[in-house]
Length: 86
Figure 1 (cartoon, rainbow, N blue to C red):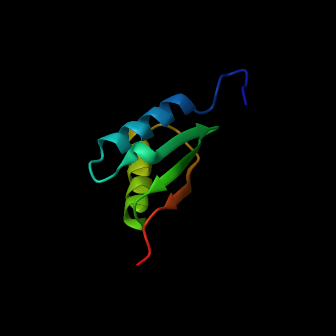
Figure 2 (tube, one colour):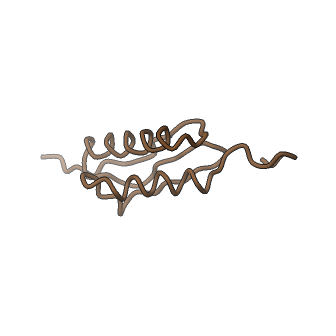
């Protein structure tokens, strides 16, 4: 939503910050992860190889956004875990 004072959230910057953090994290395969931000709500979608990778990805995104001091509402988890069942 646009107001007379501009956007409340810088969704493009939020998305870029989160994507860069995932790409730099060596313990995450971010090639199957998608980050989107709309009105400050950050959504992490796609797939992770394990529950551990999924949690690490969510933590990485949250930590990077908090460290950037970009204003956002929350991070939503829409990821699937591809871990094979034995």
